[in-house]
Length: 148
Image 1 (cartoon, rainbow, N blue to C red):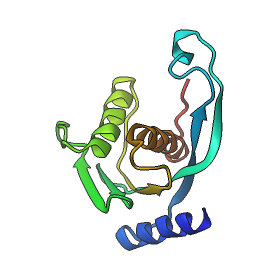
Image 2 (cartoon, rainbow, N blue to C red):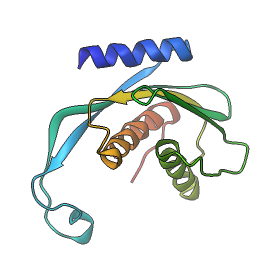
Image 3 (cartoon, rainbow, N blue to C red):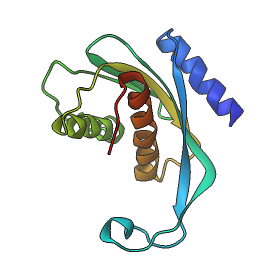
Image 4 (tube, rainbow, N blue to C red):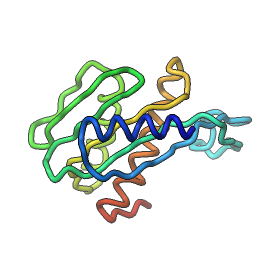
């Protein structure tokens, strides 16, 4: 994991040159109860040794800049323009999180983010969920947000 963290930090420095926060979001398996927890059923998740690692920092701009190390892709969008889907799954997922946060009354501010991990890419929805779960604590720290 140390090597993965170092890789993410190096990529962040290469793209953005800022102080940053490192967030590790562990992978997990549900031993019982896949998709039952939000239906009042039982669930027993367990963390595993796979992670998504994010380096993020506010950028004092009204834009979000993201780098997906594993995919060797970048994405940028402005918070000043109407949001539209990109056609790529990973930036659209985070754009959806931004839209839902704004609907809930949070004002999303610009940030830079580099992420990667060792959760198999074939489990894209799991990777994206771990990424989202990493972004929210970062926003909490930088924006002093509290979530219910």
